[in-house]
Image 1: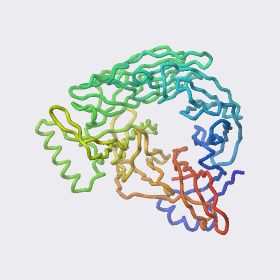
Image 2: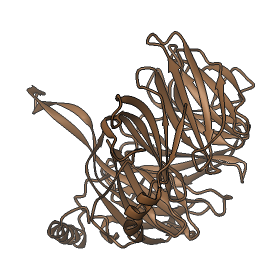
Image 3: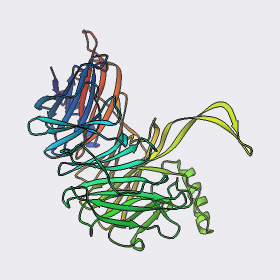
Image 4: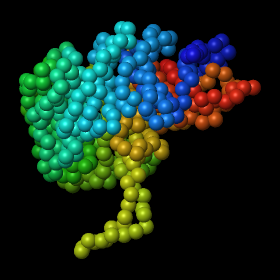
Length: 494
């Protein structure tokens, strides 16, 4: 049985009241489910109407029997409906996309080219599935739906390059959409925009020396309806970008640019989609007020002085920053572009190998570490209004995916947060007001006398407005009772 507790009891309210004045986040409700990591796989999905969808698969050790279940909760984590679906037991969750009133989920199985697509009705939990063999693809990276038709970015099983595909679920075959598939080219963003009846795909085209952006737009039948090239300006190569919704005359690209070394970002840019590159705006990293504030103040000052001197003498900066962009957040004033600054980590194996001209120490790639995260606020014309920074400590991922969740509150605050065992580490930005204090929030239990023995697979997603959802598996020892393993969902309100 699911067990929901409202955590803001009178005693807790009295305890938290002083913190609320300082805008500390609260945890008004917690849900516990009797799941364990050996038998249950879960996925928590935020829905556009402020409700929450929980997918959970219960299976045996050999994965020969499995139940695929869904529960929808309202904003108070009260159950709305519960349902199950018929899916082959070997299938595992890959990605999802919501186009109301349906959420679409992709499953993969033992056959790498075979994918099952489940269409879940959010009104009552009914579902239907189709299975498709995508001969050219062995993995799916991105998934959008427009008027019930699927747009996919996958990996070509032959050359491991990205592919753009269109799939009508009523048909067996998917088709590869026209795009540039060069060795140095990749996809930057894909946005289903039902208001304009199109899917916009942003591609980075590169020959290894310079790069530009291309935006292809398709209708719901997979037909190409427009193609726009965003050219580089002078010595600036456009690296990647996010695209805004709206009609062509209003769309803006917001992203990063580089120069000679295309691995590193030199700054951020904005460019209208329907105009030439000369109308773009470029902001180098030295122009940003807070980008370097992840450093100690003296180091930041030395860095700014050194790099400014290089720029004034006609040289390039020595910045070596890589940026992983988040999806754009629309605001009443314009847009917020967030990104994580990272670098690859390596471990020395204390062995060497050589070429005729040089020797190299053998190193093993260990993942990607973050130094800080940034947020930039733009108006609706793409003019930069403010920037801010969240310094990060000991945050890394084994593969390159988002380590943080980003939300935007109705009163204009940008909230960045990530899970860390039994805590949530968070930072609240008020436009360009920088604060370097790191905040943490302990995940509340039903009973303050209970003890958490360990937490596994902690997760966090932005839910709606200034509300997030923290979840994961916990082993809990209640006072005077035996320990139990549960799956928890806590609402976090900022």
